[in-house]
Image (cartoon, rainbow over all chains, first blue to last red):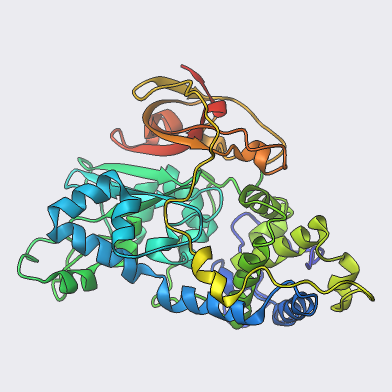
Length: 230
Length: 219
């Protein structure tokens, strides 16, 4: 690992800017702060591990395929939509989320216990992992870069309303904001409010409306075309 | 340890940067690093807590500079060497040491579905008595262990209320250092935003933190 590159860095300077893409930004594009030698180093490490018989490259391919194509926020969206249309399922989801999620056949592998947090008109839930990047893989897949970034991890607990405003969500003063810091092996999934006017939609149509962001708690679920915040 | 990874409440980190239609991996090497970490953990030479702690040991300026999967790569290299699965010389040369035995991979394609375990994994079998109960007022201890811990700095010394007993879990502070699982109760503790951040915080808001028995004392 390149430990002696001598960057002068403030706490805010997350990116090294040793790449062409983000030179006009102060911070961000964490994922692209990749020196081109990382490609080579990772390739060398993989071939060493393969040569030593420690990993099977086909298993790596299958793992990547799983997390790129099979595990992701569509799974969580189906859980949410089912809860909206089926009160018994919702009750199970809120009391024994693992059982409810297993009913739809979803698995993860981060060794997690899932807890579902229901949003109400006067309660808004927001999920963060201040210490690392814990996230409910089984229902949301791997977390986006912003969720793992210093700005989100640092501010979600001290200034949740400011963070939510940056996501375009202005939470009124009479709504209680509850922030859930995932410090242990519990994984939190937000059950967003079903949008008004969605009574005619099928479970499948509802699932299509549910976003990853709404299930982390940084957005609300909206009907298409309305565009305005619920 | 009081490291830069313990970010809750820090200021000056800038705005949250959002990427629309973000891919799962931004480059091929990111996916490979992710998969290598998963595949190598199947050797069970380290545990989840040790693996998290290894990332915390990245020097602070590097931690802030590195991308997420760059940290995963650095972590994996250190764990491989520490565990003896690979030597530093092998990493540097990219070649297995002469005469080193060839292993059989632990994780195979057919093993992936079992790796994707049911969402509710087994808890430690050992029994432990809860020292606190739901509704009780507690204080997170003012403690500063130099090793791994999952009690965030911002909660230490603060008073909260137990809202849920999650049951028995492995204790990260010992498990990360291979000093045993020390199974104990884990609770969801509610802190008011004002207890944590003072008058600047919104009066109704709160932060819920999952806290192990050993991190708590009576308030």
